[in-house]
Length: 366
Image (cartoon, rainbow, N blue to C red; front, side, top):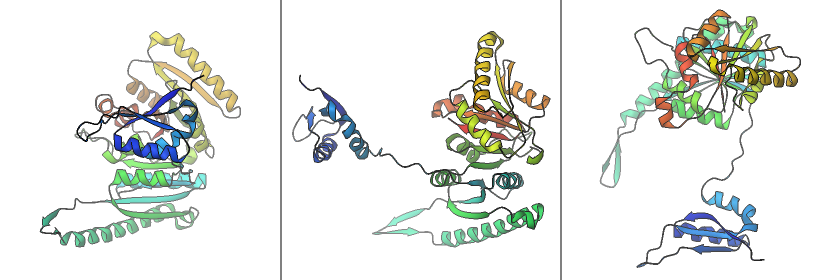
């Protein structure tokens, strides 16, 4: 029986030759097709073909060439990360993060990024001319940020109490760069258990509600993010009683709820899973909610979990009403990654909720 050839890549001729040499060095027979020589040029769509039996062995080599090699994902560290900008709402987030770290017995990391200015240079002959005054300016900004950090930490220590402050291991970091990118890079290399961020929140005469840094971290981070709106009351976690998880019966809900219960374990808080949907789908939604409740009851028999369905046409308004009527302390949900066009014309529910509520928002990522 003749063995079957399969195409594993369609590449420019130069890369196809490199891939062929890499495969043959591993003992994998390789064939190139669609090589059209025209006045010294070659086709850009060269097929790289191998025998079907060698696919499993060949894929890691293909991924390595194309820059898709598997990277070991860093294990989650027992830390709570708090990006700070020394504002009042950042201070509020830091207070809540301290209490969470204390309960979870986690290390607290305060992280401040100094916005890096654009470096302007001018080519002059064979050298580049830079504005030397910029370096003095950056040095002054770093010294000023260090002074602000000291004042910020002293204010936290005074508010919390020196003895209580010493019960939690903490450190602070200052970095020159771009806030969103550097926060995400840090969490990729050293994934914390939780990111706690404060946001300014809506002003009556200001439509620019969510900061771009917070929005970017919510959207891109793979770590749970607790967002503290500027107008949210200072929550005493020891008295936290109710947390609602907004579910849309997504397959990732069980994973998010599992993480949520892990964070809630040291606290005496009740979890409520809430679904808001149109009354037309009432029977179908009730069946799915009952199934979710049964799965959660079987998996967490010692944890009281309530499942509620509420019919409405505007999820944002209905959620806000439910939070106010039931004195909810924290709202939690799972957000999904979307492409740029979808993000512009149909913002995720997580971003919309920050616009509408004054309740802390815990966001998980699918």
